[in-house]
Length: 465
Image (cartoon, rainbow, N blue to C red; front, side, top):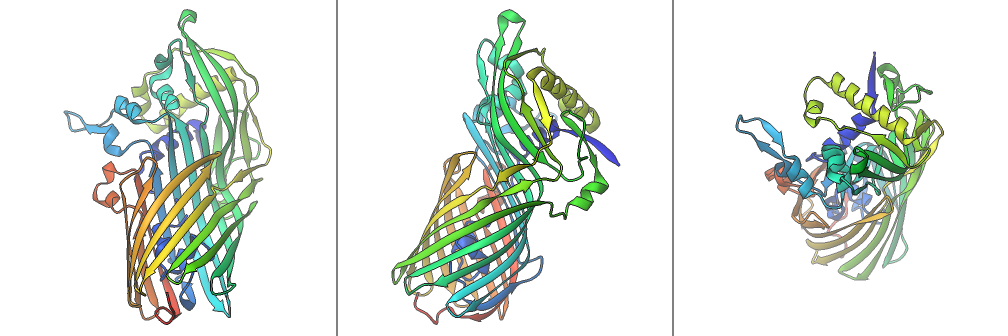
């Protein structure tokens, strides 16, 4: 069975993603829990205190997390007099900054194991991952909801719109080596196989509404948006919509036709007996999209297009089929007027790399304090974050951790977690913002990670901290 879909459906999905209170790779809090082997995802030169370990297949690590810089659910939705849920467009637009971000990360570890061999530590993992970031301007949302009415005789600037979303398989091999009593280095090599992607290389768009010319819109665009989705015909019609073949999509979900490579690098230095510093960079890599590539590129500039506006309410009423058709007709007209063309050449997208600086101070063998300075790179922008952490190792049985995570526009993120180990069986759970579960309608950051491992040869409390 085939369904019609369009880029507008993606636009709706991105807008809805901005409201999501669920689904950054591993939890940042987990990077401080030494008793959990998955903590090495933060820095491949970190310490694993077991002779060897293995994850329970398909259950060793599940992670879902999201960060929204713009607004919360309760900021923009309210109950009407008839008890229906209503969307407050004014509150939504007033709450946005000039530039806003939404980040979504999901991962599921299928297979994982690691072991020590003399001064080396070796590990292997197979992981399914989705990682994405969406950067948008306030002018873009004003245009979508107010159309050109909000820009009479002024210019709307949508420059800086950026999207990078990828679903892919990851097979990694990692190793670390204790160079001496002070230095440890590590790396993780990753082979990637892309499943689906949408990636913007250039998104410069401005429009001017001239009141003297019957509100004609003048566009100036320099846009390149690439996509690759399973189930799409190899050479669809040159339009903004496309046909989706479900059977073909299911056959291609497990495919390995879009190869890529990435690397994690890390190093730790024990400055004092109780103080260890670390530096790492994660997800330096790319994916080459060759299966069903499709790119929307602006061909010419300065196209005038007269647009009388739409009734926004009709797009949120009726069935989904009529909704899609309305938007597709609108976008096809815009595409023709703005000089867009479609081509089907392979392209390269880059992962969302992160840079981490860590410090860990141990007060005795059971109390540990941590500091993390983090920067995520997306669309040539830096997204910084700071985490403060405390971990209590209550023997080999239980580890408790608490922290505070601070980002530019998310100030109230209380991180909590624990690791419980009964004989060789380990269960752990961490969250980067426990307040999201207490009051989800008021949070901008949410995340949860949990999993099950089998760990053997626990060497904690046998060595100096």
